[in-house]
Length: 78
Image (tube, rainbow, N blue to C red; front, side, top):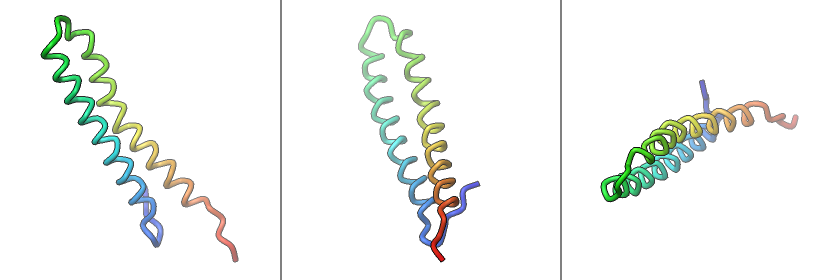
């Protein structure tokens, strides 16, 4: 589990990345949803939509976790 440091940097980084991925996923979903309703073969686009909507939060969580690991392993000067 991610725990923020004194400045809350881990929480802020994870939150910002999650919001960015969420906005990108929402825009892509809206564009592809519009395209699906205006094309002949929407079945070809369904794996792309599903893949992106599954991978976006996974990528956000992975990035937040790696930011958290890096912030916890920094060597602080004496």
